[in-house]
Length: 402
Ligand SMILES: Cc1cc2nc3c(=O)[nH]c(=O)nc-3n(C[C@H](O)[C@H](O)[C@H](O)COP(=O)(O)OP(=O)(O)OC[C@H]3O[C@@H](n4cnc5c(N)ncnc54)[C@H](O)[C@@H]3O)c2cc1C
Image 1 (cartoon, rainbow, N blue to C red):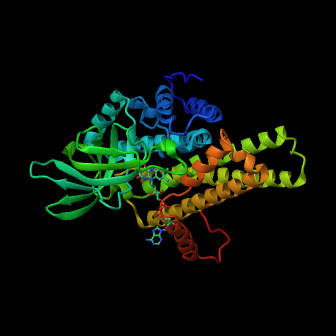
Image 2: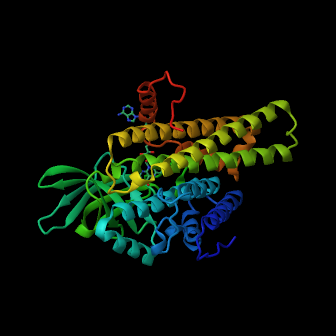
Image 3: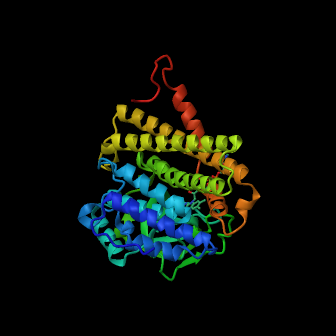
């Protein structure tokens, strides 16, 4: 299906476009295309649907999608991610990084933000958001005597390797030999000092996200390409809010598995068996639970709207709200993970070995979802929830804010 350009970029149009893009991805899987073929086509689809600029403010040609200070925008952002995830978690992953990079530049980029964003729009570039260090050679951004910076070391799990002409890269800032904290900068990945390696990404699933390794060999970074100050990327509620975005994409893939399950049971005339009906009911219940967690997370994100302003001061009461928010989003992540893992297990039992014979949407989603469920610091999320609960007065009948 051809993706039409819609200059209005309403949120409902964006969700509709995401549905078309997901539909294209599913068609390709059904036609037996290898999962590494898709990324350039998917990016072309995202571009023509206007999704590459959707999270920009309206004044820069975007639609404010995902802005916690715009009522309904976070919920709409999660809807787009869930819809993309139903067709291709790899496309959802690349778009999520790009869309978030634009938000971070806009919020923290200071006086240079507008120029960086205009450059991205003019190039129609896909931007990577690369934080995960290459464990063998961590990224460092070293201040030079002439006022500029030099990037060395490497990144792994860099989604969009070879596809992103620009990337927002996190690195340890080094000034006069001293570490000053985690610093983001917008880097030209086509610079001759940047080496991209996709061969490392030889994985079971998510192959289409091309999450390879990047080596920086003294890449120059101008001072006006620094985004925010040291540790801004780790500021709350910004960092924790991202949990709902990957959970939304994961849930979309799990929801598509239910669609595939229902279709296969009906066409195989196995849809009246009581045990199979029980599996369908259980999957439907778990996935609806995931939706409710996402809806509530979106509402809580928007309730904290003013605290997303980088200039906001965090008072004592706010600190408690931020802790509760982090714990709540941790529960969202764990609940969607549980719902997804159970869906994988039940769909596997319901459809049997046949569903893994390619070309098969179930086979593709199974591999991709299994890999994409592995997100950072899972155990820390569990501990955070437990710590928060034990820190509350459990004698009252309300544990979470209403
Ligand atoms: C498809 C895909 C695309 C990605 N794209 C990007 C991207 O574009 N940009 C980017 O920056 N990153 C990206 N990532 C990386 C991602 O953000 C995570 O860093 C990555 O998935 C690692 O998760 P993990 O569960 O394997 O982590 P690990 O940290 O290796 O955790 C594995 C397990 O060990 C536990 N654990 C963690 N630390 C400790 C400890 N100190 N002691 C004991 N146990 C511990 C964890 O809780 C977990 O249970 C991507 C990942 C995937 C899968």
